[in-house]
Structures are given as structure tokens and as C-alpha cells.
Image (cartoon, rainbow, N blue to C red):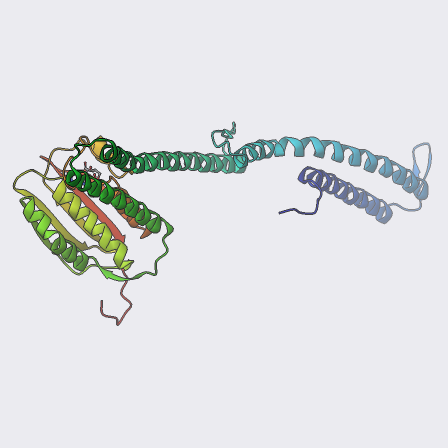
Length: 364
Ligand SMILES: Nc1ncnc2c1ncn2[C@@H]1O[C@H](COP(=O)(O)OP(=O)(O)O)[C@@H](O)[C@H]1O
Ligand SMILES: [Mg+2]
């Protein structure tokens, strides 16, 4: 936004310094003047002659003029130098800000010296730059991974089509089946990406949602999958009212329960889903048996396209966005997501959302 040019802060500070110095000088001289006028008779006998008041006053006036002139020069020069030193950190902050505006997020102000207002500003700015830089790097990684993931099914389709076109002995039925699988996967991936961006936009009207109902709905829907995989599902919990998007929170619950079923033991796996109310929050816990997960690995699982230690080659191999979507939906609801590896194996995932505060007299 263009603005009209104004006086620089350095100049304004200089003028204020000089102004205050002049004011102090004037006050001091006025006091002397006043004192002399009040207490000195017109003629005073002093050693060696007579002191005439009017002569004294005119001497005082010319001395005052000199003093004021010296004070003015002193105030202006001293003020200019002092203001320059005071404002030096601002120049440094401005330089780094300009660099950041031009796209260089790697510079930091790193203001030396003790803690003061400028240090605070510079440190806050450095923290902001660091976060921005990490965020941009994450977005770039995400775009690269997403393109890579989208290219894979396209490349496979191309190879399959090539076989169909050039190989006279090809099995059409098999090629169609494989094309179908690959196509479904590409659609799943695109839908997951769309869902992720929808959750990121936070463009939903919050409604009252009971997490325990969502948990029930998710487990009911996924029961056939659980049976097919020899996993027992257990759901219990109290009414847990929260405020949010029912569709997104259902998606979150479905992703968690589906993960808990799929990334489970090959036989006799267990999944437990429960909801509870805490003083200010509501909690959804999904835990499952499974292979042991090292804590450092658990910490990375919510990153997009992160798929644990080994890639899952099954009919239900996910696209690697399930937990990233869960995290984004949780954040869109101002909640927290905690992943804890269980002993001897498997994972416990806790979603904590702000509770819907009941107004007095309202039933929840
Ligand atoms: N409930 C769970 N138990 C054990 N491992 C899990 C669980 N949920 C997720 N994971 C691990 O985290 C990875 C990422 O999960 P997710 O983002 O849903 O991707 P996807 O399920 O598509 O692989 C999974 O590949 C799996 O290794
Ligand atoms: Mg998944």
C-alpha cells in the first residue's frame, strides 16, 4: 500500500531530544531570571562599585542566547547519534523482512545483545520465519510426493495399454482387471487429496456431533472388513458431544477404525473403540493389537504418504493419507491427536476435541 512520505523516526526522535533539551534550558533560565528580578534591588552595592540590575539582566539575556544555541546544537547532534544507535536493530529487522518478502526464508535476524523490546520482536520474527520455512518445505514435499503417487497408477496404466496394443497374446480379461484396480487406486488417491484440502480449508458449519454415535456407525460399517480379517471389534463409551462437521468427523473415525483393522495381526486381532467425556474435552480412543511399532516411527505416521516400516501389499493397501487426513480434521476442530505404540504391539490413537459446553437449562 503506497503511503505519503513522512518524517523519519530518527529525525522525529532527534527533534524530540533537542526539543526537550531546549525546554529544560528555557525553564532553567526562566527560573534564574525570575529569581534575579524578584530578589535583586535596582542597585546593589558590591565590593568595588554598584551592581545595576538592568545591566545584569541584559548580560544574562545574552548569555542565555549563547547557552540556548549550544543546547540546540548539542541536542540535535546528540539526538541524531543516539536515535541512530537506538534504531539500528530496526534496520536489520527490515532487511531480513525484505529478503523474506523476496522469497528467501532461510535468513534470520539473530539480533545480538540482551533481552529488550527489539530482541523480543526479532526473536518472534525469527520463530515465525522458521515455522514458515518448515511449512513451505512440507508443502513442497507434499506436492512432490502427491505427484509421484499420482504418476504411478498412470504409468502402470500406460504399460498395461502398451501390452494390450502390442502383445498379440495378451489376456484382455486380466488387463482389464488390472486397469480397473489401478484406476480405482488413482480415484481413491484423488479423493483422499480432495478430502485433505477440504479439511484444510475448514469450510464447514459446526454442528453438534456425538462422537459415540460416529464410533458406532464406523464400526458397524467396517464390521464386514473386520470379520474378513479375523479382527474383533469392541465399541463402548458415553455420550460425547462435540462441535464440528459430522461428515469430517465420521471420516476421521472411519479412517482410524479401518487402519486399526488393516494394520493388525494376521489372526485374532482386536480393536477397541471408546469415547469418554473429560472436564473440558471429549475423547475418542481407537486401539488395536498388531506388530510392535518403534516410537520414532509412530511419530512420523501422520505425515502424508508415510506408510510405517513395511509397505502393505494387500487388497486394502491404503494411499498413505489416512492419518494425514485424521490429523488435518483434528486440527480443523482445534483438537489434538496422540499416537502411542502399545505393548506388546499395535497402536493407541487418542483424539481429544473441545467439549460442547452445555448452556444451563439445555439438555445435551
Ligand atoms: N492402527 C494402526 N496400527 C498400526 N499401524 C498403523 C495404524 N494406523 C496406521 N498405521 C501405520 O501408519 C501408516 C500410515 O497410515 P495411513 O496414513 O492411514 O496410511 P495407509 O493406511 O494408507 O497406509 C500405515 O501404513 C501403518 O503402517
Ligand atoms: Mg489408512
